Image 1: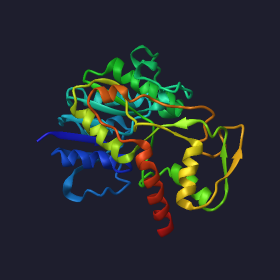
Image 2 (image 1 turned 135 degrees about the vertical axis):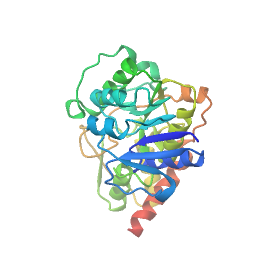
Image 3 (image 1 turned 30 degrees about the vertical axis):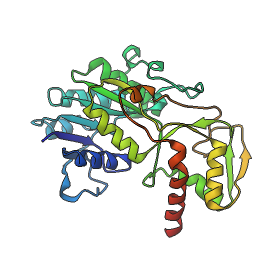
Length: 297
């Protein structure tokens, strides 16, 4: 039986990843601090470990072998370097969850391609996640993996992931604002973003881990939504009009408040055979489900 280790995997799309692996017959082990209860009962093995303590990592994984390691919780070059030291000679492949934040925040209509950020040529600087912004931390982690790793690595660049189990509640923020007729702040309602669902994110990680692909790869649902369209979807489900306030600042507590379109291309993943869902086909339904869940709570 193929063996998979998931660093993280107890929250959000990490849960979807584990479910995908179990369906495909993997012997799955979840490694985490054990602070969040997972829903898998006796279907998985568990290792309690501090991801930030390299000696604890070395001790817990000293005699292990894996077909694939999935790293959901790496945010800096130092964490990547530690993972390389821990898992060298112990895994056939390593799948690192990166982010579209490795790209600049303004894109053309076609979106950033993988070549727009090249970690193989990026200057590697050592440091923990406290030393970097989120995007720079992911850039540094990619650079560390691709510069130093002795095993094959995939860096999956996701946009914002959406779903009913999103503990950040960024989409819910807007649903609540419209429902409660509170001000919603945006710089530019014509600015567009792409997303991926938690189910699709977990499924893609499992899929790319079993593929022969190595290197950075974007993963996002087909299509995009303008911020004005997003509010229209919410208005339809809530049956109220949004009270939009125009602001000149992106940093206004409004999580999707961007000044210009910010997209990534999924053409590389599609060329490898992955079939993404269409964002506008599932987004309205997700908004309705999220609203219903709020009303129950």
